[in-house]
Amino acid sequence: MNNAPIIDKLLQLNKQNIISFHMPGHKNGKIYDKILYKNFKDILYRLDTTEISGTDNLHNAKEIIKESQQRASRIFKSEETFFLVNGSTSGIYSMIMAATSPGDKILIDRNCHQSVINACILGDLVPIYVYPDMDEKRGIAMGVSPDDIEAQLEKHNDIKAVVLTYPTYYGIACNLKKIEKTVHKYDKMLLIDEAHGAHLGLNKDLPLPALSCGADAVVQSTHKTLPSFTQSSMLHIQGNRLDRDRLRFMLRVHQSSSPSYLLLSSLDFTVMVYETKGRYLMENLLEDIRRFRQKIKETDRIDIMEDGITEDRGFKSADITRMWIGIENITGYELERRLRGNFNIQMELSDKYGVLGVASIANTGSDFDKLLNALYKISEDVEANKTEQLQNSAFRGNLAFKNVEQVFTPREALYKTKKRILFKESQGCISGEYIIPYPPGIPLVVPGEKINDEIIQQVMYIIDDGGEILGLCDEDCEWIKTIT
Ligand SMILES: Cc1ncc(COP(=O)(O)O)c(C=O)c1O
Picture 1 (cartoon, rainbow, N blue to C red):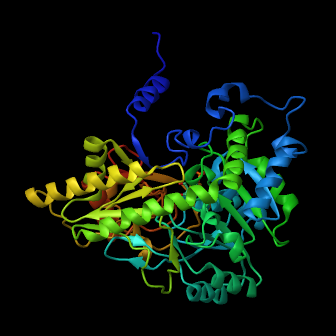
Picture 2: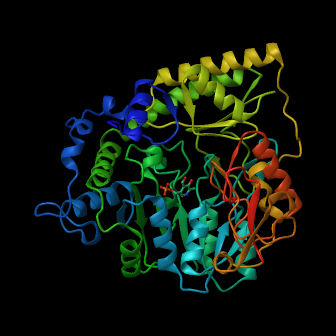
Picture 3: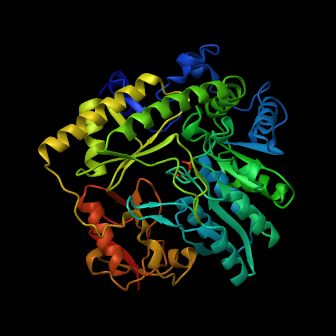
């Protein structure tokens, strides 16, 4: 058989010229039309090399990698920057495990990415949670409040570090400046998962970058919102609270011993673009987005999450390059299907009420025109046919984790004996696995937590609506492993 299924499918999809409002940030390579640097995309295979004379070693950088990391450190305004080739996941593991010892407690926002919980498994840590405020209408987590963080630090004076998602997947930024003051007042480390915010420094109308709010360590998925390749990220450090030798050790533990030069080259490319053209491209993008948002606001059938939500406990500002969009009488899952099926537009994710679009400096004005046009057409169609009604007003979807009780730490749960039972009958049982609506990849239940009736109901809603749940031990999500 003379074929290669992955390559064949990717080439076929590539021919379709899908309009991308999803990751990665180079938008199917569109950035290379804007930045014609040495035909970067055409010479890639020639850049795939290893540690030979003339190159460098990521784990002991002295030459070209060191130079590029130093340039990144200067423009992202850190004291030291490390390139990551195993995603932000590896940076999150490394920064958390450099800051803690087995048995330590860490304070985490409950709407964190699963990599933060996995770091608790690897590092044998006890997670203490702080819960985000909710936008109940849209079923979206806002942010955590400085007061709630202070209350937890007061209650558990042995917490070692505070790990927060800033901004969230939906672009919500909590009041990190205020949180930083509290965390450092209690003499704890502030570690930030800024996977969704690598681009924030490019314009003052975006939320403040976590480093400028005073975070001790910040991990950024440059592949999500800037044009580096999937799996390439950065870890930035400032100050002396985090032991940097220990961090270097952890980075070696969690990353490949054969770091890809393709990924490293794409990080180098991103640093160059950020410094030379980043602000200009971001200003153009924001103009397109403002125009797009204004047009949406003029219709009353399409809802777009407002940049101007009023500042409150868990909300300080929003990243307007994240566009949460809902249309009355149609689920987000269906909206995503129609955008892709009828208009060749791929969004980042959908949930019960809406879709999320991720825009980057590689998007063009015409992408926004096409999205606007598609949304007009879909909303007219829905209005004319009134085929679908949103039911289940009790749906709280991805946020039903608030009343879940932790019985074992995630690591304890991992090593307990388990049995398979019907998920529908698991009320009151302790979960032996994650329950994660995907995307966004935020766990509803973490191993070691008790499954309650609300969780069962919410998961059934998600499955009935065509959403995907990771973690349940069979494909149909009928069975779950619980701790005996
Ligand atoms: C909030 C958050 N943190 C961390 C990660 C992990 O990032 P990466 O895919 O670069 O490993 C993700 C991935 O989606 C995420 O959404």
